Image (cartoon, rainbow, N blue to C red; front, side, top):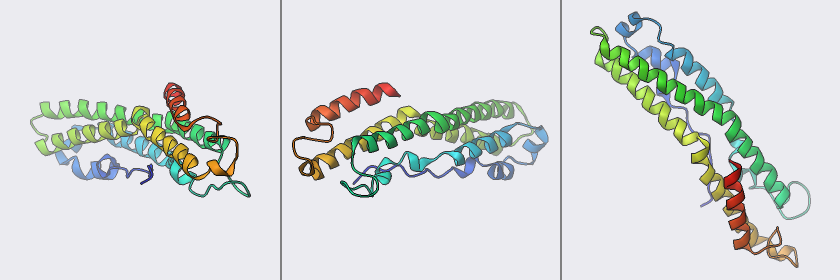
Length: 195
């Protein structure tokens, strides 16, 4: 089964609508926390991420050897691979930063809520769950978590080329003119350094 990166579903608990519903009447009387506004900012950034640019397996699904359209080649692969890295270190990195900011804000609000005798424990618990969810989503989307996924997609691309296209181009062992294992080892080293 080929490795894919579909856009993750945005957690309901990190939406302003869910926050407004679950913070409770006493928490509303506590005053402005900034959580709702931060949630709006995070979700806006999340919605702007082009996860299709990261799903390299899907992007290369229609590639063919020669002819019209995108062909199986190193330049074609490098183009989508570099676009994926740019999306991860650009828009997705912004989302992760904001998720960590939301986590920290939720932890601070949770500490305030714990001190209050009027705010119910359910509201305090809900804020803690927001912090945990924001942290987990941020970790799952950061470049350290996605780098192995990109590497696996790259390995699958090289395996596919080795398996299906080496006979199309006489005189080479793969698209780079090297043995398949040498290519994989070099790409692992270079791709890991680029993040």
